[in-house]
Length: 190
Image (tube, rainbow, N blue to C red; front, side, top):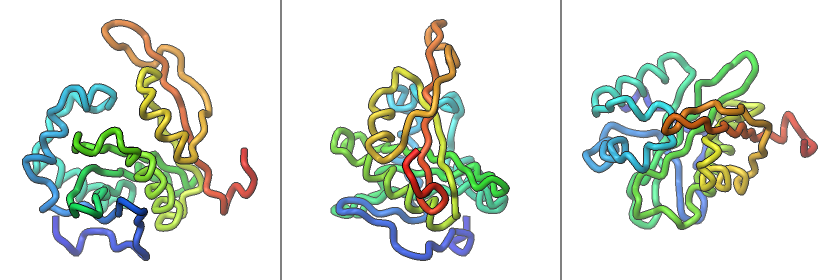
């Protein structure tokens, strides 16, 4: 992945403790790759059965940028200047101006500090500001309450449920559907 292929943001996206920037090849080191091998960390990711290598991740990022539909950003801890996670915006449906937004705080040393809420808020602002997204949407396992709480604390709302959507140990688990609305397009709370 060439530096020129990275998306240039129109402004900085930062909070008190975090900043977002394009994910670079130098971010994808052994520690980064270990996040995707951590079974406990990946148990709620529906694509966690995939084996990720540095090359496959770089190829996926390049393909997303080339298609104009998927962008991956590094979550940077401002104190240490380390990449501690990722935010994926996409796939973006440009006709409807909607997109998924997936946040992963991969570095376990940063869990339990409220950083996911900060990262999601930054992701909301980035998706709305850089891509003109009207509505962000996503879903999570009903049993992933920490994710549900992080998204709702970051301004998302529960839109519905898909009953028994997932199978976990051969038991059905609901998928909670969540969304966040760009106030430019939705000026009143819905």
